[in-house]
Picture 1: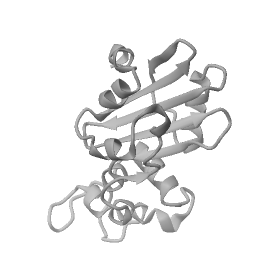
Picture 2 (picture 1 turned 180 degrees about the horizontal axis):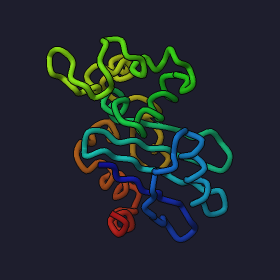
Picture 3 (picture 1 turned 45 degrees about the vertical axis):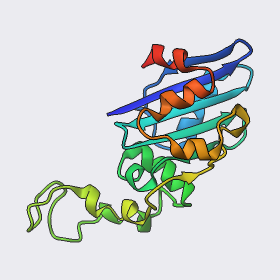
Length: 178
């Protein structure tokens, strides 16, 4: 289960809105979602979290390239939205078949069909997740100018998005959409 929210900076503080990721397939789609929520091309933060397994931040300012941080690349690479972020951070091309070996049936079983061990979990054999580093990747200083150091960001564990929002002075605003 995913939680996704946008925090848009305004002259009056932060405005939060939850967001649906159903139509998101690329980083450009995520950036467009953020830009649509922007007020006067000011900072927008997209928060994505998957059940305390990992969280990701995408920071968009005007037409600049998005800045990205992911708390655990290996865990995120096993999920569709996390894979979008980790592919960007690790320089993978979404359209390159060599980067998507899990789409090939190399063991003679159909997707979801048990292999000889009875294992149907493709996440453990996902080459993208296997090559993604365990731990944080991306711009660790993504929130430094808002008073959240890289050390503080790396120390976050469960309910990290709320702690980040509180550090930004937007905890109550995020809670209203959660």
